[in-house]
Image (cartoon, rainbow, N blue to C red; front, side, top):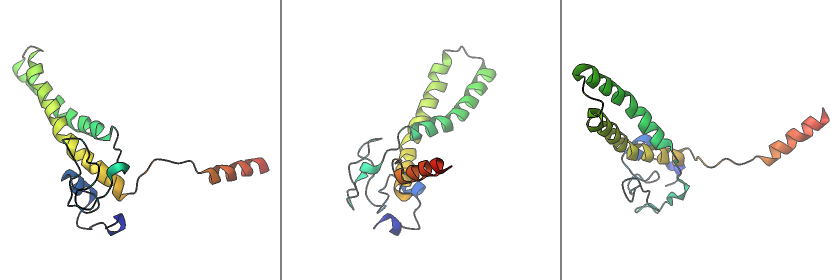
Length: 138
């Protein structure tokens, strides 16, 4: 099944959150918690195309930051604990929320890369040559 034959009932977000192969939606995307498998164990799709970079971490921190800040402020103003008490409450809450979000977000971004045929940018040399000729003519 190619990306053109992508199962319409599955969208990249759902497939990625489930940690499934973006092509067949059956195989496993991950070999470890955050380590991508080399290839799909069902259809054999090579996951070498996948490079979500820092995207999952950025989204996880952004999503977790607002509730963590709200909790920290509520905790501080309600109980007025010493600052070190946040090390045992707010910090584990924030780190835990980020860790819970990383895997589904990484899966979503990898599946989106496959579905949308994302790849590294390339230089369009023909366009640049045409632009240079156009500038030279004026």
